[in-house]
Length: 151
Ligand code: COA
Image (cartoon, protein in one colour):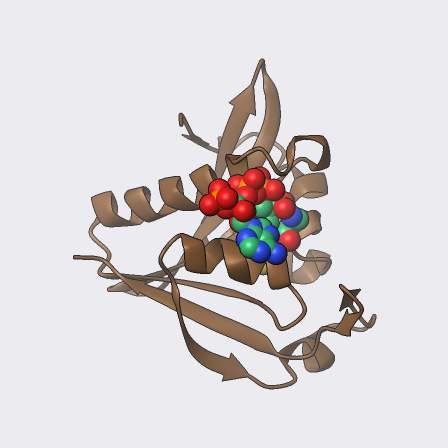
């Protein structure tokens, strides 16, 4: 999968980034502090993720998202794998990713990519998001943190 860095003069694909995180304030913060990567098909942005350094050894994958019409075709998994490869090439030793307690499909995807659950931040979403988030009939309250150690 060919991915490319978002250019400094380009407008970030907010529609996609907000699919992964409904908070524009947080999305803007991750874009400012991290680096945004794009996957395109026929000139259209189909997928996105942000790599955010947590410390010199650890990077977090943020805002991974695939355009709705293209979901369920394996692109999300390839994006996560591309982000892991990139983190490895840059020289990070660990990759982390966080998701909500209600994001059951994302939890499946990340574990299928090799991530292990390491932490739960209770009430992260209740505290940081004004609007209640409900997915799969489950209120999203806690952040599940997952980690992968790169060899
Ligand atoms: N049980 C078991 N496996 C599941 C599953 C479930 N409930 N839901 C998904 N999966 C698996 C799929 O089987 C697939 O694995 P496989 O290839 O080994 O079969 C993998 O997870 C995901 O499939 P893929 O087609 O690559 O996902 P996608 O292209 O739809 O992208 C997202 C996944 C999450 C990026 C995409 O749905 C999206 O953009 N969602 C909105 C934004 C978002 O929620 N981002 C994450 C924020 S934490």
